Image (cartoon, rainbow, N blue to C red; front, side):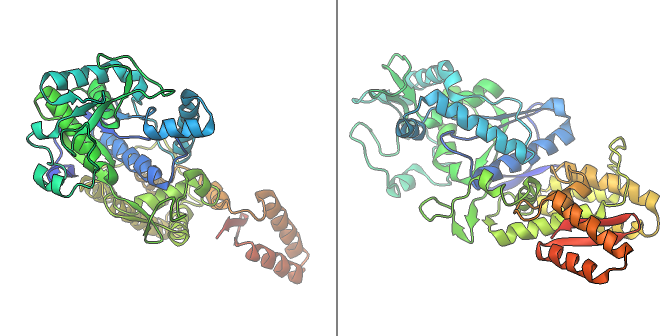
Length: 465
């Protein structure tokens, strides 16, 4: 039975879909004004694995995964002005870049990927409903605000009441607001900004209302799972609850999932500290699957400490798993034995709030057994190798050919694959000629380039350390 740590209740709860056998999940996606960074990579990978596992349990056709795109926002407008670029050109460019990064990391596309600008009618209708219910008002400056004091359960996500939130608020009180906690639903257009017609005047939506409108339009007024980074817990997700439940009068989402922050060398990641890494920069030094393994080797809720040392450890660990698959014939036409001890332990880990580190430990137990079998029973080794890959692929791992991964997992420069193969061929010739000094020289050259050789009856294999 799958159990999920529900941020809203603060409890680990048994997962029960609203509609038996079907799951609907919405995840807050990217605001597309720049390249995705390593924090975005964690969101992409974590919820990719969650959706993969839900599809394993309920069937691919019974899971609907929605991940939105915010394509109208203050930061987007500011960046477009800074670049002297049309907003649509800017957002299209960074959406394409986001897809490239996600594809590289083995992240499958969501079933639905709505863009805020494509749901303006739903946004306008939701704002009007909130006004009609006395939950929103148009201020003297023309902006429309949500009146937080009128939503009695505001603060349930933050685990604070409104009075505590108000006393701890550092929000500057805008003259137009009735309360400093009120948040904008509709912003009146400034000259030169993109705008849409509304009954309150030309303007554009606030960020929070976009997600309420997109999620309910795609999945209905009440759905199973809502996810995102921990930074969105308050106020974004708090405001989504207020907007959505204010409109419908009933529960918005049953289970809230938030992944933890990414830190860099134990410091908060930020551009101001100069420790801000975009995905495509990291991919120049590490193979995509290494980054994916690094992310999944920590529980999604825990802080993730980004460093070269931790990525190097991830690379070494993933290399160990791939080495176990060498010399074993692996076929994809063999089904996963779900009743095996290894499978049951793997599923038990994943059923415990998607505990990927524990699931990965099962993969290592399998690799140790596989290495033992390779010296005694190659047939059974082949069977176990298939099971290892099948379970790993639920995490998006071990998707590559073992030999190719071991030869090409490092992207740090140095000798090319062809140059390495040429040197190995020269060394083979030297061995045949019993020119041991030349053999040693070539090995030293390769060792200096962090190339590890393995002599086998079938020839010499190599991998990058």
